[in-house]
Length: 235
Image 1 (cartoon, rainbow, N blue to C red):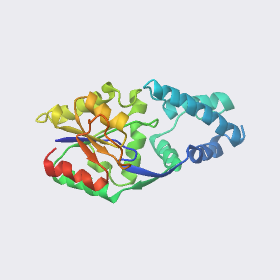
Image 2 (image 1 turned 135 degrees about the vertical axis):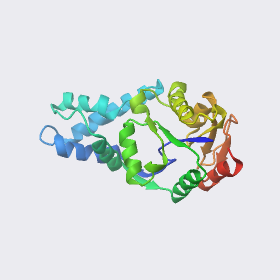
Image 3 (image 1 turned 30 degrees about the vertical axis):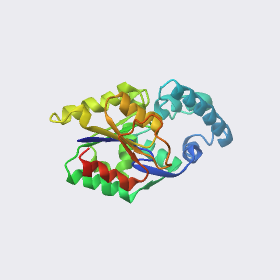
Image 4 (image 1 turned 135 degrees about the horizontal axis):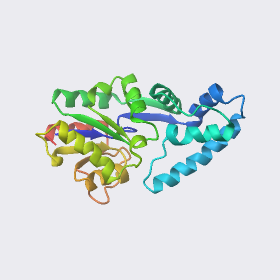
């Protein structure tokens, strides 16, 4: 068995989300002598609409690669890049993350059962930044590799994005087969349907108790502790 995890609301939960918390710190450090924060905030909202339109086309809109140069062009700044640490700091200002103890317990149980684990995430932030945040929560050690759509350019449920992770996982674990891979995620349209289209099993972390209208989820888990069924049944 191989398990690939979604990131947001699967590994880490967001107690609150506000992009402007991160943007305000960014403005304070680099742009407060060039523009009003309200102007930067308004432009950020414009760019968010661009992000939404890109997502409708299945494309990602990376924050550092695409948005930072536009802020500099708009307001005359020269901050057009970020280190992974700076990205992680920005993202953690935007999101008040919390680690579910049951997820950490599940990861530990998977490790004890020698189950290889990976992460595949839709995010406008790079894989390096997402990995840095997992490290700050003490769970990066469980994963062999993490992929972010910010680096790939397209978002789940894109089959090519899934196949990137699946191919590496199978190369790393040559005794395993595609049908032995399980993807764990919380969003039906991206995670469950994406896994199905990629020819792998899925465990839907269905915290809202929604209906599996297409009957695609291999496991329908309404609470984190139900994920342990995956280990108990051997996938």
